[in-house]
Amino acid sequence: MLFGLLCLTFAISHVMPGDPARLAAGPDANQSMVDTLRAKYGLDRPLGVQFARYVGGLARGDLGESLRSRNAVRDDLLRYFPNTFELVTLSLLLAVAFGVPLGMLSAVYRDTWVDHWTRVVSVSGVALPAFWLGLMLQLLVALHLGWLPLGGRLGLTATPPAPITHLLFVDALLRGEWRTLGDALAHAVLPVVTLCFPALASILRVNRAEMLETLGQDYIKTARAQGFSGFRVVTHYALKNAMIPTLTMIGLRYGWMLGGTILVETVFDWPGIGLYAVNAAVSSDFQPIMGVTLLIGLNFMLANLLVDLAYGWLDPRIGRPRPT
Amino acid sequence: MSTRVLSMASAEAGGVTTPEWKRYVRVYARSASSMLGLAVVMLFLVVAAVGPWIVPYPDDARGAVHLDQKLQPPSPAHWFGTDEVGNDVYTRVVLGARVSLEIGLIITVLAALVGVPLGIVAGYVGGGVGETIMRVTDVFLAVPALVLALAVVGALGPGIVNAMLALALVWWPGYARLVQGKTLALAQEAYVEAARAGGAGRLRIVFLHILPNCMSPIVVKASMDMGSAILAAASLGFIGLGAQPPYPEWGAMISYGRNYLPTWWWYSAFPGLAIYLTVLGFNLVGDGLRDLLDPRSRVA
Image (tube, rainbow over all chains, first blue to last red; front, side):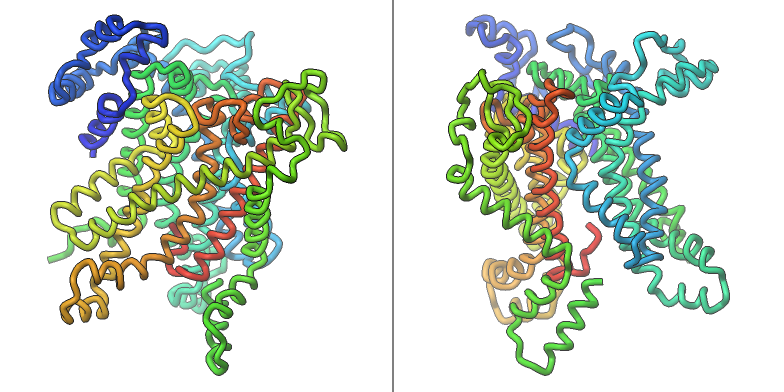
């Protein structure tokens, strides 16, 4: 898979009809300038050689350099990725924390007003453009009501804590800088809500559907007949079985969030790899985009691996060697 | 839930000879949300079809400039207000429907044209070829669509055509995987075995037995994808990599309108509402079709 991902990013950057050297040289460059750049980046070599150099560079942690800032892409990614990681993780936690119980309630109280309202949320969440939702939240909550800051990670007066983990929340917590933590939290509310909404909607949806299916199974009826309380049946027997497809959706949605973060970071000026990729893309700065693509692809693969491992924990039948 | 409705309907229809399509229509019409979705999609299609003839200021989609009328709030003359060069936002939103319809159709059709044959080959021929196709599909699915599209547009350069190409390029694996799974299952069915035993060639089996039976999930996916493709193209437009001004594309309009928030809110509020309603409509129709045609694959 990893090899496939490398092939894909290589194909996009080296084989596609776009010409990175021409893009790098800018619109006014003449042919000789383009050729010089092409030789400098090794773009005039055979594809096989280029691929070997590309993979070799990656193995040494060399992701190329940004044409705009002349920074090494690796350093940029290391600087911006923690911000994206915090945004996506918080959003995912929020989406699961609300999506799973709401899906459960919606299934248990099927066809009541609870169910109708959660369905409105679940249908809207998938259809709302994240960037537009973000803008409208900014308009209403930040600009009109003035309750929360407009964007960025910290206010102008706040100083970030000295780095330990490079995760702002964790560092502020570890250093006991409560005001910074509060400021960072206030800045995070709107982006996190915006990013989590579509994921919340689809997690809710899947969980509701699965709960409905599970609640109709015979073993649930048996458990009820044996006198287990409704709450215990729902949470202990039904939810755990409904969680497997829900977990698949959570894994999928994590991937979507890594994509959606591009839009949300752009709207809220959140200094993560999404904003970094967009800034690079609009100025045709090629290496950063490929670096971000690779990093996000890797993350998504890792998340799917975690989901697979979690299956085994939820359903002991999966992944155990058969007794002989 | 709708499976139950469907079986009830078939039971009802059991005694009488109701034509099958009428039964389908009746079942579809029982779901309020499906009908709402259908109404929204119909409205969208009508607006996309007759847009140029019903808008008050047709020139405003082609970069006309009326600086004396710039940034006016919604009023009877300009229902959705005007933008920074005095163009009528209502006109541009209405004409944007056709743009979005084209974008959605092109992406979905291209993706299906690539993905469906590959899926059938992978599922029916199998072997090394099938394995290779599915590995490539997996790689494409391992990168979130929007990120991959961003990378491709980054390589090709911004613009609406490149954005559509990029999105089609990242969209086909969904079809390949769907069709491959379905084909694998169908190849085991008794009637396919029978056809094979009867001496039917591969192509005949594919076109007569496999493809028609894959159509329901493909149609369901396509109707959902219309919404997602429109949303994704608008997202690229918003980032500045999709449609370029003065092309009346909703995402790009929001992107420009963003610079005029909060005072001139109408500039980006209405195009966003249009995206929301359109995507909502296609999703609801997709949901309704799925409950009707393919109830077993509810979760996907």
